[in-house]
Amino acid sequence: MGYYVYVLESQSSKSLYVGQTANPTSRLREHNSGRSKYTRNKGPWEMIFLKDFPSRIEAVNFEKKLKALKSPGCIRKLIISGSVG
Image (cartoon, rainbow, N blue to C red; front, side, top):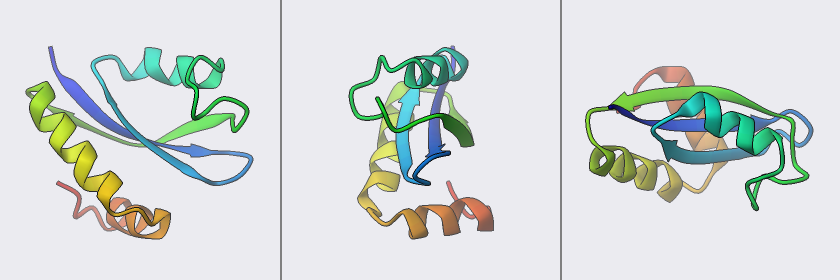
């Protein structure tokens, strides 16, 4: 089973959310149904980035790297440039 790091973009506020999961389809559904505390009332959410990893440890480490950037602009720039990973 693979693990994924994903970036969601709020269609209402254009804010970003970075997370990791083993099931990105189900996780997006949870975000859009209000079952995730941070993303509740900020959607709808669209997945704008998805990267797979062979282990959860690798996914968590990459998630931490993206979250350490803090700036949504920096995260967007990495996604667009394709130099993520």
